[in-house]
Amino acid sequence: MATASFRVLSLVYAKLLVVVCIAFLISEIVTTNVPLHYYEGFFAYMYGGSILFLSYVFGYLLQEPSGRTGAAGSRDCNTLFWNKWRSRGSPVEVSLNNINGSHAETRGASVARLRKARTSDNDHSHGGFFLRVGAIAFGLGAMVYNGLELGSYFELPNDSDCRKILLAVNPCLQATFTFMQMYFIFANPKLNIHKLKLVARFGLMHVVATNVCVWVRTLVRESLRIFVEYAEEGERHGDEDHSGELEDHEAIEDFSSFGVASVAGRRGNQTCGRVNIMGSIVSDASPYLFPLIIEYSLIGATVLFVMWRHVGRCPRYVSTDSDDRSSAGERRPTAGKVDCVGVSKGLFAGLLVVAAIVISLVLFFVLVGRDDHRRLAILLADTSHATILVLMVLACLAGFIKCRQLKFAYDKPDDLDTILLRISGFGLFLYSTFCLIAAALSPQKNVSSVLLLITSLLVVIQVLAQLVFISDVMKRSVYLPEHDRTKPGRQLVTFLLLCNLALWVVYTMEIDKVDANPVQLHFYGPLPWAVILRATLPLAIFHRFHSTVVLAEVWKSSYRLQ
Image (cartoon, rainbow, N blue to C red):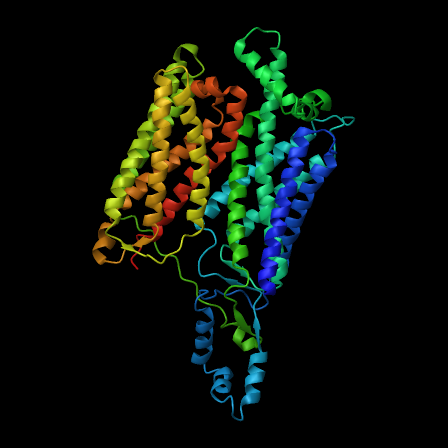
C-alpha cells in the first residue's frame, strides 16, 4: 500500500515540476513583470537536484561492498536464488527441511547472514547499446550548446541589466548534469535500485522532469530566438515597401500585443547592450545543436522513467560471510562475434542511397544560393526525397513477406525502443501534415506544390509501414538452421537501416532550410513556418535516428539462432 502511494506521489511530483516549468516559461513570454532570477532559479533547482541525486547514486548506491552481480529475471529471480543456495548445500536447506526439528536455530542464524543488495541488474537493458551511443553523441552536442550559451554571457557588459550570475551558472550546471546523466545511462543500462527506494523514486522522477523541462525550455527559447531575428530584420527593413515583409511586420505587431516583443527586446541586443564578440557562431550553430538537446532529453527521460518503474524489482541477496562474497557474482556472457551473413546486397544498395542523398544535398546547397538555379535545387531535393521514400515503402512490403519465415513471439511485450519510435513518429506525422495542408491549399498550383503533396503523403505512408514492420520483426527470431544460413529479410533490414541514416542527415539539414521551402513559406509566412519547423523537426530527426538504432538491434538480435 505504501509502495503504491509513494510511486503515485513521485509521479505527481514530476508532473508538478513540469507544470511549474511551463507556467514560468509562459509568464516569461507574455510579461516582463517576472524577475529573471525566479525563472533561472527554478532551473538551477532542477539541475542542482538532478546532480545531487546522480552523485548519490555514484557515491553510495553503486559502491556495493561485495560488488554488484547480475540478477535473474524478475519473473523467476527468487526461485533461481534459492535453487542456487540449495545446490551449494547451505545451512538454509537444512533449516528448511528441519523447520520443526533441532536445527531451527541454524535457520535463524543463516538467514541473518543474508542481506538485500543495494542494486541489481535487470534481465533486460533499460536502453539498448546503440541508443546509449546515440545519447553520448546527442549529449556532447548539448554540452557544446551550453558552452556557446556560456560564451554569450560574457558578451554582456558589466553594467547591463541582463548580466545576472545565474545566466552563467545555469549553463555550467546543465553541462554538468548532461555529462553525469550521459555516463549514468551508458554505464548502468540494467540498474535496478533496492536501497532507500523512496529516495530513488523521487530522485529518478526529478531527473525525468528535468529532462522534460529542458526539452520545453529549448523549444520555447529557439522559437523566441527566431522571433527576435525577424523582429530585428523587420525594423531594418521597415521603410521598404515589400508586401511579404509588411505581412511579417504586422505579425510581429500582433505578437507585441501579448508582450512577446518586450521580452524579446529584453533578451535581445537593444536593451542588454550585448557586445558581439563571438560573431554569428551561436545563431549559426543553434539550428543544428538545439535538436540534439531535445533528442538527448527525450532519451534521458524515457530511459530513466523505465528505470523508475523497475525500482525494487528482482532484488539480489548476498551473504555477509567473507567466504561467500567471491561466489556471489554471476558470470556474464561473453560477446559473440559479429555475424554479417545475408547483408551484402542490402548494404551496398543502402550505401548507394546514402551516396545519392549526400550528392543531392551538396548540389542543393550549391545551387540554392543562385537565383537562376534555385527552383532546380528545390526540385532536386524533393525528387530525391520522394524516390528514397518509395524505395523504403517497397522494402517494408518485401520485408513483411520475407520475415514471415521467422518465428513470431506473441507474448513478447513492447519495449522502450518501440515506445520511443511511436512518440517520435508523432513529430514526423505533424510535420508532414503541415506540409500537406500547405501543398493542398496553396493558391499557386505548380510543380513544387504537387511534388510537396506527393512527398508528404509518401512520408506518412512510409512511416506507418515502417512502424508496423519494425513492431513485427522485433518479435521474430531465427529458430531453424536453414534460416540461420539464409537470414531471410536481413538484406532489407540493412537497406532500411542505411536509408533511415540518410534521411536523418536530410532532416538535420532541413531545419536550416527555412528559405528553401517556397510553398510553406508563402502559405504560412516566414516566421510561423520557422516556428513550426523548430517545434516538429527535432522529433522527426530523432525518429530517423532511432529507427536506425532499432533496425541495428533487429539486425543483431533477431537473426541470432535461438
